[in-house]
Length: 352
Image (cartoon, rainbow, N blue to C red; front, side, top):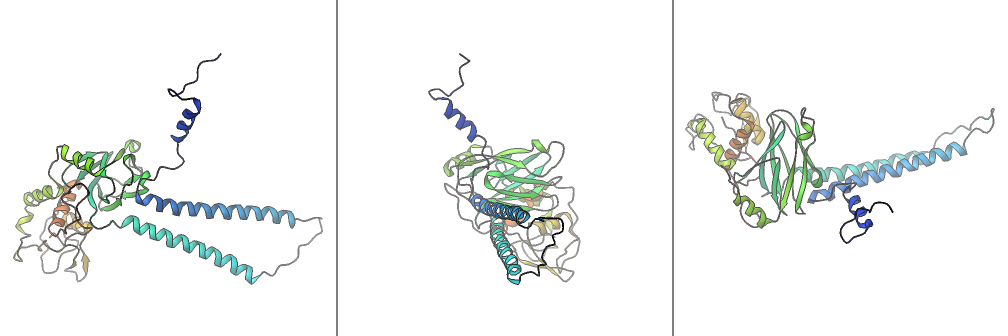
């Protein structure tokens, strides 16, 4: 008799084999509302590719056998073509690729347009970690706790190089690029812990830039929020920075300041001294802080100093959060409680 086979207590060998097999799924599980949509497009592309690959390979073999040269002096019959055949193999592929384009575009726009009232979380990529801050000030490193069944919008920036925020189970991924902001949203449908990766090579320890997304029931999430030692919220921290950097001396509530009024200008069109205009958003506000001479507001002098190198990327996010809060729209309360600081996907006008 050989050594006994390893089995689970009270079970035979077969259940252990099944369990081991399911630990290596061919695809990550679907754990967000976007996952099924992305997989649908993907499987359609795979099915079309497999069908035409098999069809073409089969026809190549059939034609090679049927129309092969049977003796050395045989000359093939000239073929002048068929208009119907040419139209068929032009119109059918065109229809198929248009289905791919339309379906893929619909999914793409759905992936990158966060619903109104989504819970906002700030993310900063840094070699080699993810720094995360919730709207109430709760901070995390390489871990993101979110409530089940509520849209979550990530506002992301990088302190150094290009990173890529990737959650396979949610089928969402977005580059995090220095000098600009990107957003990403998802709505988790299953509680649990899911892998978080950086999907862009960012240096020697890129492979260690990993983490987890923890999806919790709404009540459990609220208990987690209240149980931690939360620091200042991004809005509160941004307000302190706004004061300490002496921004309040120019951007007054009235119209007498040396800088534009920031209140109630969320998403508005800003007329520029150069004659053009721009719609204020996160990227514009960031540029106004680090490069104030790039787009000077009409009617104001280019006197604002640059804060490039004086504030970190995380502090820039806090300043943007505060400026946006000056025109904050009321957001829908989350299930199981409220999360302060949630705003629409908009930003106020110039900060100089």
